[in-house]
Image 1 (cartoon, rainbow, N blue to C red):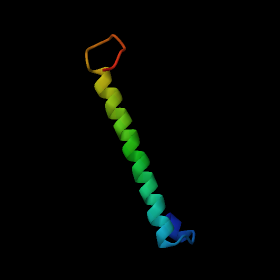
Image 2 (cartoon, one colour; image 1 turned 90 degrees about the horizontal axis):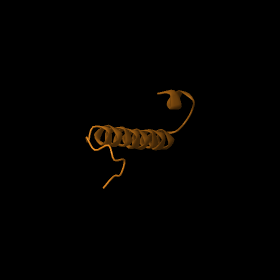
Image 3 (tube, rainbow, N blue to C red; image 1 turned 180 degrees about the vertical axis):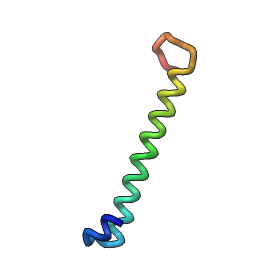
Image 4 (cartoon, helix red, strand yellow; image 1 turned 60 degrees about the vertical axis):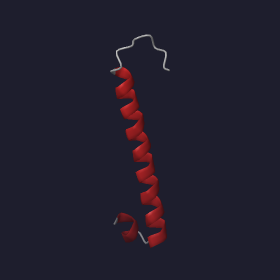
Length: 48
């Protein structure tokens, strides 16, 4: 919506939306991995 109001075309809007979604997915994956590693119960600090 903001990109369209700024004059960006539909193609640019779709690309920006895709990049934001991909970054969000990577952040969610990293947080989930950190949570899983933190709750693994193994405090040796070495991952398999």
